Length: 429
Ligand code: PMP
Image 1 (cartoon, rainbow, N blue to C red):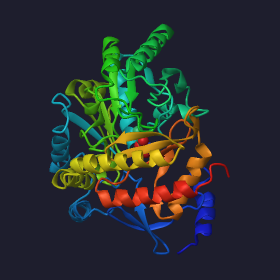
Image 2 (image 1 turned 180 degrees about the vertical axis):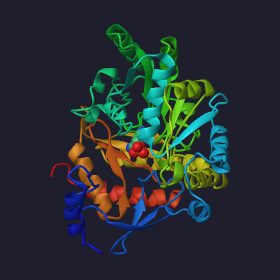
Image 3 (image 1 turned 90 degrees about the vertical axis):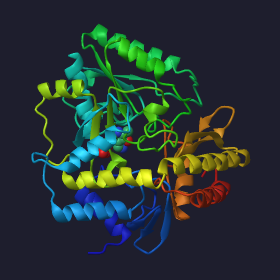
């Protein structure tokens, strides 16, 4: 059955309910992808500057081949002996600090974070969790409580276990040493202890991607990690968006921020679109968790998922995608900085590697967010065949996060188009 765009929109509402939002005023109907390119149902080509799930490129041949070969041979759950899951966990843990040497594989990032929180409870005997007030960590009963911007109105009474600290904001509220952030974590730890709930863990994306990727200098999380450890809690780094070389300087953003987490959680890019997530930790934490929970995940770590995930790591290595992110990211930052000299509503330029963007303001002095303008800009880009999005507390930060094989030529096309769209988009409409 082939539906028109209008029929697709109506049928989504009818069959999937009202919660599933789409991007853009005029949603795109994508039917094909290859590398950094997408095609819609009318054959129109788009430059994908947003999707981090196809991390090593849409329909990456190595990943597709690995999936097909394994699906043709065997796919089953993890109660049988199989090399795939072991080969993957061995390869994955070789990229992190030595003491993070075990893992549980899941199907989603949400499940991974859910396990991480339960690990913190198992280790500390306490339940108090701290996160930033502008993040997202997933959709289970437990982790949906972490999304302060979207806290569920129901939720099994779990809300009492969560406290929040202000998300770092290098533009409006600089904290270059990370000391104020560490202090606010300490304050919330004290509140958890005072309430009798006690402190179990701090969970953060080490590059604060959902919060608008503030320009925190390398090593910025060190004072915070000290505060967490002193209080006997666990540091959970959610690398669902920031990991696998995205920032261009390190494989994992926690390495960039100068800390070793107790637990690292993974998802999105891990299988290049094939559903697989993970929790990486040390054997003591994993063992303690397993004593409290008889954890089994039917699909997590199945042979096909592991084949996809191994191919992703191989592709990052063989195609030098971390170096590519560093090189192209530096070029992108230069181009966007140049645009900021020309377009006065660019208030701030941020990012590292292949996560970069700019905050749009109505006035550079007052820094008043240009949220509606930003919305018009991303819709204007979409109309000209360039896909990216916006985010941040004020929804006024362009979020550009392309697949990792993004090239200098791709970046030039993106910024030439952005230059044109910024020049033509009215500030008030
Ligand atoms: N953590 C972060 C930082 C995320 O951005 C997301 C998804 N946007 C999740 C966790 C949840 O992952 P999933 O949708 O695979 O459950």
